Amino acid sequence: MMMMMMTSTTCRKMEGALAALTPLLLGGFGLMALCRLVQRLRLKNRVRDRVVVITGASSGLGRECARLFHQAGARLVLCGRERSSLQELAQELTESAHGELKTYTPCIVTFDLSDVDKVAMAGSEILRQCGHVDILINNAGVSYRGNIMDTHVSVQKQIMETNYFGPVALTQAILQSMVSRHSGHIVAISSIQGKISIPYRSAYSASKHAMQAYFDCLRAEVERFGLQVTVVSPGYIRTNLSINAITGDGSKYGVMDKTTATGWDPAEVARAVLTAVNHRQKEVVLAGLLPILATYIRLLCPSLFFRLMAARARKEPAVKAE
Ligand SMILES: NC(=O)c1ccc[n+]([C@@H]2O[C@H](COP(=O)([O-])OP(=O)(O)OC[C@H]3O[C@@H](n4cnc5c(N)ncnc54)[C@H](OP(=O)(O)O)[C@@H]3O)[C@@H](O)[C@H]2O)c1
Image (cartoon, rainbow, N blue to C red; front, side, top):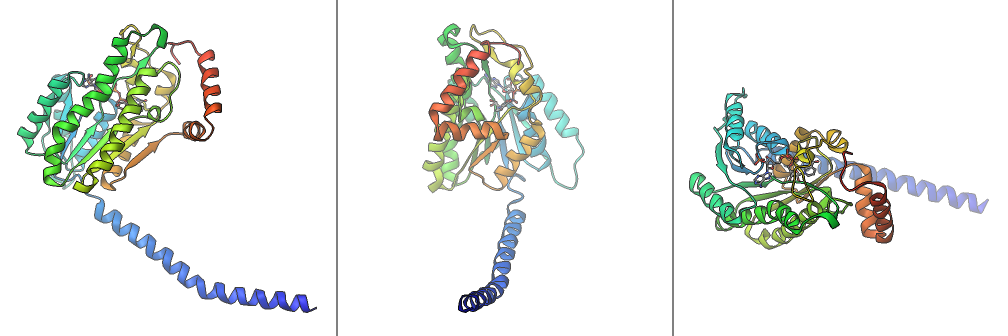
C-alpha cells in the first residue's frame, strides 16, 4: 500500500515537472528552428556577384556546378584544357533564360593541371583578369583502373599530378590574394575513395587521400585569416569519369562502368556543392549506406575491412567493365 502511494506521488511529481518543462523544451526547439531558418535565409546568397573559378568545367560535375553557380549570379571563370568546349558552355550559359537575377558572361582560362608551372601561370592570369577570386572549386580530375603490378610508375605520377599537384598549385597561386583580402572559400572535390581505398584504383584513391589530407591541413591553417575550406567526398556520379579513366599502361579505359552509369545525378551533387558554399560547410560526404559503413569499418575494425577488400580483389579482374 505504502509502496503504491509512493509510486503515485512520484508519478504526479514527474508529471508536474514534465508539464513545467514542456513549454520550455518546445520554446527551445522553436527558437533553434527559427535561428536555423534565419541563418539559412541570411547565408543563401554567398555566390551572387562573386568570382567563382571552376576547374574541369567542360564536363560532368564541373559543368553542372557552372550552370548552378551561373544561375545564382556568380561571375564564373571556366577552366579546362579545351577552349572550344568551354566556349560552347559559356555561350549556353549566356543565352539561357534567367529570372530577375543579374548574371555575368563567364571568362575562360585553359590549362593542363598536370603541368604545375602552367597552373601557376593560369592562377596569375585569373587574378589579372578578375582582380581576385572569391570561391575556387578544385573539381577537375581523372580516374584510373588498373592492377598495381602492371601499372607503370609514370601512370601513378600522372594521376597524382592532375588530381593532387594541380589543385595544390592552383590553390597556392590564389591563396595569398585570399589571405590578403581576409576572404575566400576553397572547395576540393575529392571522393569517397579519398577516405577508403578499393582494389584496382590505387593511383586515384591515393590522389584523393592526398587531396583530403592537404585540404584538411589548409582548413586549419587559414581559418585565422577568415578563409573557408570545404572537402566534398561523393560516391559514384553519372559522368564520363570512368570513360576518361586511364589504365596501367596509360591508355584510355573508355568504358562507362555500371556503378558510374547508375551513380548520383551530377546536378544533385552540384546542388550539394552550392549548399556547402552557402552554408560554409567544412565537409560533405555524399554516398550510400554501404560506402559510408565501409569508412566506419576501416576506422573501427581495420582487419575486417582488409579481409573484405582482399575478397573483392580476388573476385574482380583488375580492369573490366563493371
Ligand atoms: N564521377 C564519379 O563517379 C565521381 C565520384 C567521386 C568524385 N568524382 C570527382 O568529381 C570530379 C569531376 O569529375 P567528373 O565525374 O565530372 O568527370 P568528367 O566528366 O570526366 O570530368 C572531368 C573534368 O576534369 C577535367 N580534366 C581532366 N584532366 C585534366 C587535366 N589534366 N587538366 C585540366 N583539366 C582536366 C576535364 O576537362 P578537359 O578534359 O576538357 O580538359 C573535365 O572537365 C573529379 O575530381 C572526380 O574525381 C567523380
